[in-house]
Image (cartoon, rainbow, N blue to C red):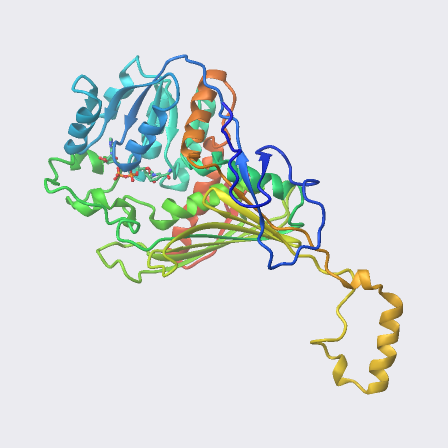
Length: 466
Ligand SMILES: NC(=O)c1ccc[n+]([C@@H]2O[C@H](COP(=O)([O-])OP(=O)(O)OC[C@H]3O[C@@H](n4cnc5c(N)ncnc54)[C@H](O)[C@@H]3O)[C@@H](O)[C@H]2O)c1
């Protein structure tokens, strides 16, 4: 179904198909830089799902488990078969929302044993992802695994091998990879709109307690109600700690910090847009500035990665930033900087700005020329004027464009639809196990670099630590 995008938002509003390239659509013009950028609304075709029934089981019914399930149920033909969670309050909540008859369990193996389940969603704490993924694939289920795909780098290899061997669809949950805004950025970059890519600045800032993972802890939280003994089967032995169960992201024993939570989205996005296989060196530094609530991972963190030149892209540097006490109020931006412009992806929307160097080298103005003798200045000016035409001294200009997704657009729904379409059609997904690992490994290496204060060297082609 094609979405209606004929609404006019500002002047110059035009439609451009998500797969249409910009090149040729906007000839060079001499628009003054102060002029408002042209704005376009992206359109997209919703992948069509047949009505073959697909029954799903959700493992981990916390915040994202709810969002993933609600989104999946919007895809035609998808039915909920079972929910598994460790916290008793969430089992009750599952029954309240989906009916008393729904099969629920605290033991995910029981859910995997059910023959009426085609696909599972793994929406647990990161430390459980790989183990459940391996068990699910062994039971012949299609898998939608939340990001980061794995908690430790070494867990990635068996998961990739099992996904390949199973012949089942395995998709990782960084939903922006299915965003039409990201697809447009990819097209613009491939079309050479910003010249040679040399840097990507990616930022995910927040400014709230919940944004910093201090989610509400239920009053009945205990070792019993959270099935703590089961929870720590995937970790070292630990005494019950409600924060480690409900604020797990902030603790390295169970979570992966800002790197596994948010760098991963920026890395997935950057890899999708550039087609990259990954960086060759990774350095990260962090500090605990504000959320001193017992957490043992930073709330302000930066990463610097070097991407080597390869068939897919020029050499570029990626800087990653997460700031949880950010006076910006929060932002999610990937800026791709090239020799002739910038693509700035802001959430699902994006803009492109151009800047060109003149063909002629600089001469005069803020230069050393005026410090020479009058005679030298005059002689050199004459030579310069003879060599370079007025045209060659000018910067070319090209109009800026803002691309917006239509109101109500949901990248999460696109991502889910890609997953279920792949199950029905047998077509591969973009964010498969290898893609998931190529993003997870450098993200997890940021924690390693932060803790060891060392540069991590990575072989992006063979996906191995060096
Ligand atoms: N794609 C996204 O944008 C996005 C957004 C948020 C979270 N996530 C990911 O989703 C996952 C869950 O995050 P969340 O915010 O929902 O966390 P959450 O704490 O709200 O929920 C996690 C749930 O997993 C359950 N759980 C843990 N171990 C289990 C096990 N062995 N068996 C069954 N249930 C188990 C817990 O009981 C809990 O209810 C994480 O991997 C996170 O990174 C992705």
